Length: 359
Ligand SMILES: *Cc1c(COP(=O)(O)O)cnc(C)c1O
Image (cartoon, rainbow, N blue to C red):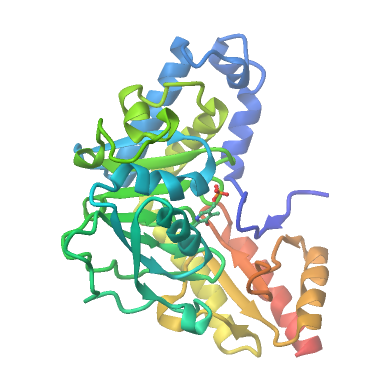
């Protein structure tokens, strides 16, 4: 079997070009006589890999100088706890619940302080993003929290909430580097890289300097304290060196194709093909139109049996991992940065055929 169109929500596709480069360098990286996997994280060649990755990410995302970038482990899920531990001074935070990951983050934060749900879309199975232009943000809230792209439900914040001056914390795991953003609008951005950027096991954090503190008001393990890795340039302990190396290549790939402007164009083009087709078909698109994600496209046939059949038959067309999350059912096509437009076209062709035969 050749390579397939992998619509998995994560771990997900990586650019083929990047994989080939990694393959070329696997046994002997840049004449070092060893693989990056075997290399000391304190060695000169590795230091360059790390620093280039940080610089390339800064360039690609246009990160202002008053923000620090760190690479950590533990998954995005670990940050659900690290966020309140690092940011709570008044032990108060306001959360916007737009799906399962936001809810998990909220529950975790409730262990550390007084957390308030200031908006939620739970009333309609998280199928939309609520209006967040004038929320009841508390005067003494330490931060406002969002999950910017809801991987499971296929929705995205197209307008950031009005946080009334409080730092905005955003989980961008499934939309990181999919389009240009204004980093200065955020207090903290974080993302597990396995959705849109690299191999699993790595989280990238971009933190505004004034939010990186020495003395925390909550007892926090050294490894969960952001300052630890900021001060050590992400080398306090052994990092996921290989994942950082692959991410560094992906940053260079984004630069090479024309940066995030071009990335956005490509992502918009892919999403448009799929949504345009969905809207005139007999399939049911599950996310409300104005909140639709450009990365995760959720839909159903209307029958669980047919959904199952869809997922099975799709495999014959090289379309894999298109089953929806167990919380939602149906199908989910994750069309991250590395999904080629050909993959989306192949999916639509299959959907047409399946529709004609079954719907
Ligand atoms: C996948 C995902 C997570 C969980 O990531 P892990 O790295 O598995 O902990 C959190 N938030 C969002 C938005 C995700 O898509």
